[in-house]
Length: 387
Image (cartoon, rainbow, N blue to C red):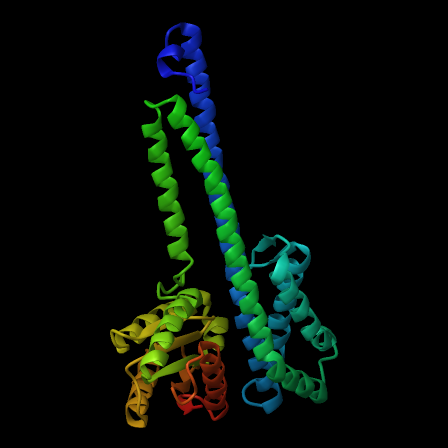
């Protein structure tokens, strides 16, 4: 049964016992707090890397298309394909077997082995990319892949890119669910420690409650960080998907119209390569602010990749209004001072998918807008194309 506080404090020995128990409980709570913070941090890294896999898949496909169509620097496109594919494959292997991969800053990041449906998605993705491994390997050697190999790889990725994106979405969802489950278990242990402290130390519990509130605040900050792009501060893919699915569900019920825009910068990589990532980051921050300024109050603006943005505009419909809005977005990008990046030309390609013409399924709209964006890019960029 619980030991009364008055009994514990009735003698020096009992006072010492109370102090020892207080320290033990305090240390227990502290360790749980650190455990939660560490686990949430590891989960956030895994979730972000799973989201990055989608960007790498698209980057691989784009690089292969550039290498086979002859638009731009073919050697640079081959190098981009090799680097993006190698990082994509390395991260998949880390998810599959446990191990390390590279973060966005080039540092090694350790990943735990995934289980359940996430492991199945990773295994399927590894099988899908297996036919391209020897082509990517040859790109790192003295003999670069020939035109036939690159053409095969580009066609293969275009045909399977949507399936790979779906598998990476499954992986991300599984990681998020596992993170929630683990956090709930840890909080259950934490709650038990507080209940024990409350039963034995009514005078001490107020200090414990202060620690509990601190942990809750930390957890809320982590969740908020997981919903915003850390560089630009606008919504990230997770937040966009949650908001967009709600809007589209209501739009389907009310038979409302709207537009989804996929935006990809043209000429951004040379700026990063020639002037450094800090210059590129400043461009992304500036454009994110400009896109949010151009958007209406009901629109959602998110960054979903390195230089890729997406907008859902529930109130935007009609060819004329869509054209005017796309022109305004293009003008925003073109208006950036080019004198800061001599020899580099920044532009934007926009893919447009409309509902209800293309249905109300978010993944379908994203896929159509993505295809339309690549069509606009293939036509020279700085333009839009409607799916």
